Image 1 (spheres, helix red, strand yellow):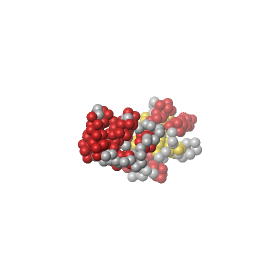
Image 2 (cartoon, helix red, strand yellow):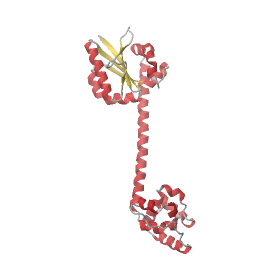
Image 3 (tube, one colour):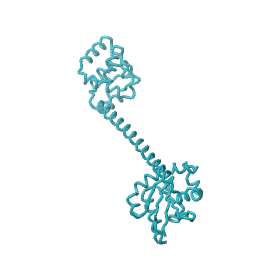
Image 4 (cartoon, one colour):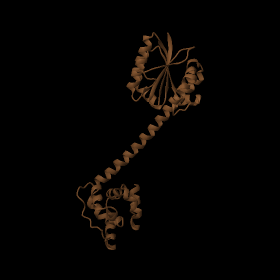
Length: 275
């Protein structure tokens, strides 16, 4: 005897119905349950193997397999395809259907499919037996394809975001590793007022790769006007790469927003941060 089956993989459960023309759909138990918790691909393979073996014992040939899948069910189904191809012979006709599309078409609650299980037998399953509308079938396949495409786009966007964050972290690590602590202690006061009030000795030591705290008085006295001008002149004479290391060290810190460059160094600091 030839027959079709409908396998529903929804909301972390799998249930199977046998579909025979001119007969009411018949729910097939799995391990003596109407539906089986579905968390991994091996569970799906086990359920399908059990169903196929029992139908074969009843001399029933599976002619069609209808897969009704939500997002999680689709992922488990795809992961199980090699084993499922062995269970259901090549003579079976398969089709995968989008549960959100079907739920919308039949007015069912897509978020709570098993609450509408009785409606499966009364509306959706008879439609699967008798429907012969090529356009509707094509629409369902396209809906499923759009879901897959949307998921792929989301994953691609997330991957690009993570790559950008990794690049930023690598840049920050490079700045932290290559900056000279002595240069930080010497030139940061020339660039930012009260800098060692915001960046304490312990934090600055850890951020610059030192284990022992730096010897910085607390409170740190502001340099005299003459000293500031001398330090700023020496800073401007440094190679640009060294200037950037010092400025970018601060630019990559969470405390940067608390530090305002001295007016006479504002333009240079911003230029070094941007380049």
